[in-house]
Structure formats: C-alpha cells, structure tokens
Image 1 (cartoon, rainbow, N blue to C red):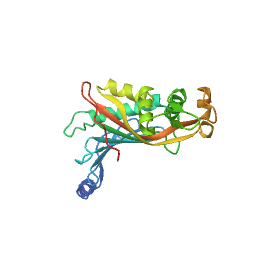
Image 2 (image 1 turned 90 degrees about the horizontal axis):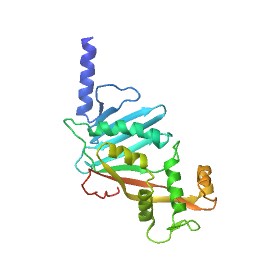
Image 3 (image 1 turned 30 degrees about the vertical axis):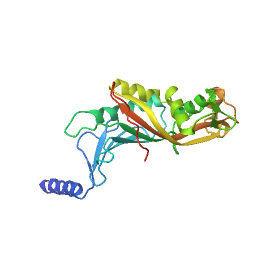
Length: 231
C-alpha cells in the first residue's frame, strides 16, 4: 500500500515539474467543478458538466493574459439551463484563496459554433436585426456604420445574453459585449432554426446575422469597462 502511495506521489510531482496537467484534489462528480492546473501553458481550467453538456473556463496565469478567461462549451442546453453550470464556474473562479482569479475579459468564442448547440442566442441576434430599423435585410448589411460595431451595439441593446448578465449582477459584477468580429450573415431560410425566426416574423429571404466572435468586458459596479483586444 505504501509503495502505491509513493508511486502516485512521485507521478504527481513529476507531472508538475514537467509542466503537465495536475488535477486538484476534491470532489470530481457531475454537477461539481473540477480544477486542473497546467503549468506548461500557464492555465487553470475549471470544468463542470450536466448530462452531455460540459462547459470549461480557462484562466490564464501568465502576465500577458492574466485578466482573461476563455469560455468553451459543448452544450445544447438552452441559456436558462446553461446559466446554472456557469454559476458554478463563476463562484469557483471568484472564490477567495491563495491564488485569486480576478478578470476583466471573458472570451466567449463563437456565438453559434459547430456541433450540437442550442440556437437561442443566435436566433435572438437574428431577430433583433430583423426588427432593427438600422438593418437592411435585403442586403444583409447595416444601413450605416461598420458591421462589427452595429452587431455589438445591437446585441447589448437587445440583451441577447440576458441570463449571463443576470448571473454576473447576482455576483457583484457588470458585463457587456465589448467587441465582436467575423460576423456571419445568411438568408434566414438557410438556417437550421428558421422555424424560430419565422415565428418572429422573418422571411426566408431575409439576410440576418446569426454568428460572430464575442468578447465580454467585466467590471465591478462603479468602475469603467476595459475594452479587450481581440486575439
């Protein structure tokens, strides 16, 4: 028995010294948050899962990206259910400890990535554009200004991430979309969730935005937002 314990201790120490991924001790069941530290990459990965939905937040510990958390999800749950998993991650990241993880930027990635994903937020963006006097649905372009700026303002004004905003406010933070890029536009009839758009008044030929890269700025109440630089 003592030999097995010694081997495990040596292996864990070797992994840390070699810059490997070392899971922290503690409960690692579904509905809990698992934590892995990767010293080689300078990352701490927080993960939680429910059924076939898994969400990971990667906290960077290097000086260059110390204030950035990257979001990655493989999840087809609607936002109202995803926010329960996000709440676990946020509480864990904000928990006091010897290595606190304050952050100002949440790098979300694509709004509607490939694979099984819930289309709720993508549909909200598309319908917000359809309802906006500033969007030309025939051409698939804003009537004035640049595409990225228009989509950023529209997404904030129409609160397409309402559940996420509520979660951060419950935890003493404010959040807003600070930057978007690589906006994708398609005729509504070509989108897999056209039935939702049609119920909202969209026509098959309406060219609408539905996907983009998203960065959120985080602040405590009373402080100003920092505008993140996209990678």
